[in-house]
Structures are given as structure tokens and as C-alpha cells.
Image 1 (cartoon, rainbow, N blue to C red):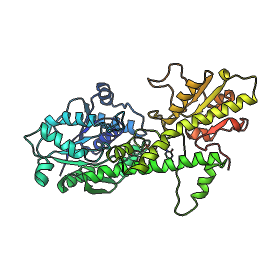
Image 2 (cartoon, protein in one colour):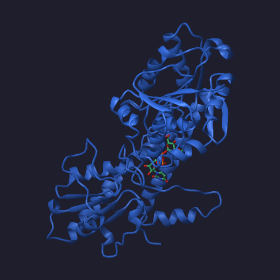
Image 3 (cartoon, rainbow, N blue to C red):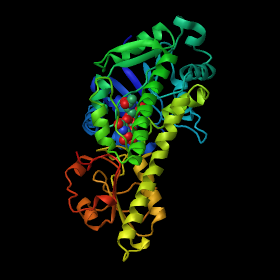
Image 4 (cartoon, rainbow, N blue to C red):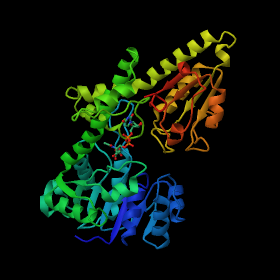
Length: 423
Ligand code: SAJ
């Protein structure tokens, strides 16, 4: 199949880079988003998110006329849906954005169109999407009723790119293509072959949905193992960093790194899709979520112990004078993304427990986004070391490795990432 016009629904961290990469291959791309402000920014050739190389790519695509953002759907050869799939309060998947995307494109669908769901989704979502579409467009036929002869082709092709490396990984990573029929998979492979240099591997829609959930759950379970080890090692006064380094010398052992918890909008979310669909069978996956979600609270308790020790050793200082420095707030190193960050949770808990100063160091951000306490402001990292009584390192940003903590009393340091550990 050939594709000249492609609509990308949802211009966020996945949709916008995907739209821009396809546009860079000289295809006309309609970028659709419900947010008028996002659409206006993109149509000026600018971007509303931080991701290396994306600004240049979007600017070029827009100025050459290949990428046009809009809130209104237009007829296209293919539609690619990349909207958020968060969970609800009870950890059940929330498919309202997928449903809105379906409603947006349904009126402009034509015989021969391909629709791809890229959003991470619980098993069965592609089929659900197909049944919503069939209800909205009874004049068209869909794979669930017409198999290979359907007017519309549908596939799930999960995005798997790593924030910070999205533009490269979009092109280089292999793609799992889960068509509702073989013809659906073949059409989707043709679309991805426009810009992907990795392999496009076909499977069923349900398998593709589960592959993505399995990948992120695998990482979550392995991080939980590292986090649990860190708590056990702390109890035995063993350096978990040295322990992991030594254990990983075994040819078949590869333990990940502990931290203050798991953040971001993928690894901490996607395992819940498995748990909510198979609660009795997913004991390990659920336990890993709990272990990782508990870790920020354990870090707070470690900081409190350090504060108490400081106060015992410095009788002139009261708890209301205590100054705690938090090094790093983003959800992982060398990015500016604060969403679902365990570091932010730790900082907030400390700020609510101590009236003294909480010194926040975050080299990747100049100003706090909306929603943070008004009083919060950033402090230079050298100043923080000079002033702080207790330091908690929460993110292993590259800048922190260069810092020397020679003069700081290590008894009052909680290093959740092992940046300043010895040996
Ligand atoms: N983390 C640790 N220890 C580690 C590795 C990570 O504590 O050894 C923490 C990070 O600090 C962070 C969280 O885990 O808080 C998640 O970070 P990450 O780098 O593991 O993953 P994400 O969320 O940025 O991206 C993941 C990726 N999935 C996998 O690596 C299996 C990416 O490929 C997916 O496309 C992305 O989720 C997604 O969109 O689903």
C-alpha cells in the first residue's frame, strides 16, 4: 500500500516526533490535537515539549509544508493514534482519549484507510476500537466482521522509544506490528517502512498489546528487585552499589540500579494494565509495583533518621532550623520531566515534615511548572552543599558526578543513586 497523507492523532511525546519524522520523508502529515495552543505552537514551527533534535525536525517539516497541525480531522490514507492511556483511581485503564480519537477520525474515514493504535493499551483495545468505529460508521466494513476483505484495516503497533532518545529510536528500533488480519499487518508494515530502518515484525493485535505491557513490566520487576536489595543491604550495612557491581560480574546476572522509586508515565503505569485484567495471575507484577511505589517513603524515613542524627550531634540546632538539600527532581537523569517523579514526592513529603529550608537543586529546569508550591525555588548546587545540614541525592544527573563532597559529613547524606558512593 502507498501512503501520501497520514494523520497523527495526539501531538505529545510520541505523536509529535512520529509526525515530524514521517513529514521528513516528504509525506503530508496532518497532526491532530485537541489543544489549540499546542496546534498553534507547532504551526509556528516550534515545539511544546523538550526532546533532543525535535525542534529542528518540526521546524523543517512545518516550514517545508509537510506538517500541518489542526484540531479538525481531514481525509487521509492512514491514521496513527498516539494519545495518552492513563489509569483511573482504581488502577483500571482509562481509554477515554482513545475513544475521543476514534470519534474525531470516524467522520472522515474512507474505504481503504489504515488505522494504527500506538498508545500503550490493555489487551483487546484494538478490537474495542474497531467495534466503536463500526458503530460510528455502519457504511464501512471492519476486520472483526469482514476479515481480510474489510474496507478499513486496523493494527496495534506500540511505541517503544526512550524519552531523551526518541528521534533516533523512532527510526532505528524494531517495530511489533499487530494487525487484526494479515492484510492489516502488511499495510501497517508498509507505513512503518516509510521511516523505520529497524525490522517490522508482524503478529496479532492482542500479542502486540501484551508485548508492550510485558516489556515495561519486565523493567519494573527488575527495578523492584534492585530497590528491594537496596533496602536489605542498608539493613546489613552493605553498599548495594558494590554488591550489584560484584554480582553483575556473573555472566548470567544483570541487576538494574536502585533509586528513590520508579517515575515517568510508562513503567509505573503499564504493569497495572496487566494487573487489572488478570489480578489473580499477576502476583509478581503487582508486588513489584508495590515495592517500587513504597521506595520514596523509605527514602523519606532515611532522611528523617539523618535529620535526627544531625540534631543529636548539633544540640544548638532545632528541628525548625534544619536545612535539607534535594539533589535532582526529574523522574530520571538528564531530562527536565517532573511528571510522576518519585524525587518530587520525596521533596514534597520532606517539605511538609520540616519547617526549615528545603533546598532544591535541578540543573535541567529553570522554573517550576504550574502546580508546584509557590514558595519552591531552585538553588545552585554549590550553594546547596555549603548550606545544607542533610543532603538527599534523588537523581543521578551528570552534573552531580562532578561535585566533590569532601567537606560534607557523609552521615548526613542519603544517596539514593550511588553517585557519591565510595569504591
Ligand atoms: N530506573 C531505575 N533503575 C534503573 C532503570 C530505571 O530506578 O536501573 C527508573 C528511572 O529512574 C525512572 C523509571 O525507572 O524513574 C523509568 O525510566 P526508564 O528509563 O526505565 O524508562 P522510561 O519510562 O523513560 O521509558 C520506558 C522504556 N521501556 C523500557 O525500557 C522497557 C521505553 O523503551 C518505552 O518506550 C517507554 O517506557 C514507554 O513509552 O512505554
